[in-house]
Structures are given as C-alpha cells and as structure tokens.
Length: 190
Image: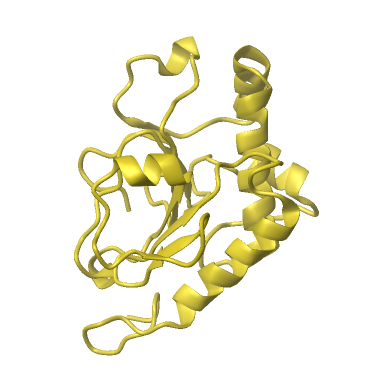
C-alpha cells in the first residue's frame, strides 16, 4: 500500500515499489503529485514521447518481475512473456506494481509495510536518507531486510543486465526468507 507523500505511476496497493530519481516529461503526468495507474498502451506512449531511456526502464522492470515469477509480488496474469506482461499489466491498477518519483518512506520494521522497495541506482540511493542498516553487498547492490529495501543498478540494459536481473531476483527471494525483527515473522505471512 502507498504511504503518504509517495507519488508516481502504478497501483495504489503496490507490493513492489521501484523508486527512480527522475520522471517522464509527459504532459499527462507533469506536475502530478499523486499515484496514477496506467492504462493499456500508456507505457508505449510514454516510451514514444519520452525516449528510449524510458522504454528501457519499463522493459527492465517487466523483465525483473517476470523473472521473479511469484504472485506475492506482482500479478503476472496470463502473460506468456515479459513483453506481454509489460503491455497488459505493469503499472496498471491491480498489478501490484508502482514506479515512484518520490523518496521511499521507510518504517522501522517491514511488518508495518511489507511492500518490496527497490531504489534504482547507487547515486540516487546515496542522495536519500536511507537507514543505517543498509548493507552494501558490492559496488552496485545493497540490502536492508528490516525495511524490505534493495538498491540496484539503474533499470537500463547495460547497468542492470539480464545476469544482474537474476542476481536481483535472488536478493529479493532472500528477503522473503529472512525473518522480520519482531515476532520472527517471515515476510508476507503475518
């Protein structure tokens, strides 16, 4: 579920929240500080109007969720590949996904907000006031099980390649297996 002051594109009941430092320069979303679910065809329209960089962001987001392949984070519906998932479900109402242009709101424990939070890009992550419990695993990936937060490379084919997407999938799965600090309650089973 979205927290106060979070805004962007996608589902208000998002279980996967991806945070990005910029937003598309698209008339429909200019100056909006709310969450707007996309309709079928809007991802293509944004990519056409705003350039190849945005098309890559949407493609990598869809590839990640399709590779994750679990209903607890996103509704893959009847999508048979990541392209159909992107076009038919990603960032739409009921998809469980959001692309947020606001900084993450991080409660002290993920039990209060079990959504998976992914910050896109080390530079953006370093500009935010992220919790001291954030552990950098290497120069590109960081994890904070207490806040259910991951930092990964920017959603671009060169920065977050298919191999790195699979690494991110494994990190997400490790979060699902790690206990919450209070009640030793595994993620999403409380």
